[in-house]
Image (cartoon, rainbow, N blue to C red; front, side, top):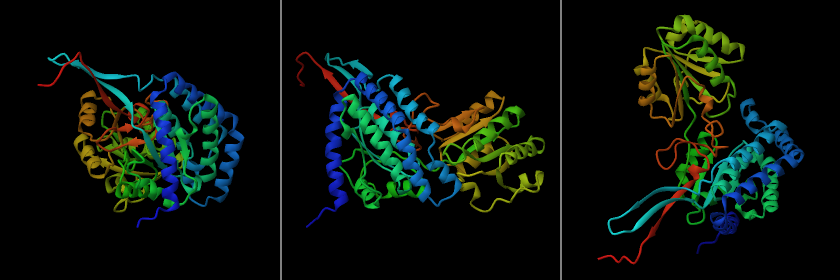
Length: 419
């Protein structure tokens, strides 16, 4: 006899309420959902002090490294950015008010493919508390309900953010159950969500490699996931040197802890003797360390030697792997061998080489003459993002409201019967 655990019972109750809320959202107008987004943004701003106090409690208990502490930390500016992201979502077109295709068959049947919500989303994330607000906003915009499960490090912050979001939903007259949060940090709640076939329609993990691998391994629910953000910037022989220096510094050091930060520099052998010492000096001045191959160390001898596996490492820190390559084909081969199909960039003034590089990538996002850190839902005009998808099915790259829709068909006839 199967006896349900408390986390499973909690999930069944939460999922049932979420399903009812999702049905209401699917029938709501875009105007009503946009009003809900603005109300949630106003509530976040109004409860900034409570959110920061909760975050301070999380930070006081945290004993991890500096990069992960940066992910966990909230400031007034970061809370304001969460609110602004919701307001930006409200300005975007309604992703549900879209006819994706329509046609008429020879028998007169008119068929339309229309955008529709997915239903109930399960969002499992780790230390970044802002993910809860982003996920709630994107799901509301796309007519989905969401069940959030943050990490133990951000438990107080996640609860305070959820309380603000719930207050906004109430103020807008929308169902509070459209955004729910797991009752605690017990990992059994994650197990229940992963086993929640029929209760949850889609699981989205956002966190480190071990979390994503666990979700992909154990889930009995479809998963929309990203691999590691092992991003490369390739400086081609025809790169503008000043642009290369400026872009690489931003791609690596703007925020080292995000998945779109460049982790490996590939530089053409033709320009490496002149340009690599300048790049190293720029980054060292910003606090960056290096792991370099033999060719790079022959140019800058005091670079630390790369160990086996360093070019397969997502540092999420002020560390940059460096390799010298002989042309675009060798750069593409390196990326194919060591990359994670997330985001890779080329710096060059040669348009033909840029197109060869971009066509040769299998990454979700390819960038020419700009920082890899532009791989971000807000920068793509999505308002916010729920993560970066690196799989091959449904969505790739930044996942915004449009990517959290599916479709269904409407068929109109005038009395046809099938022979």
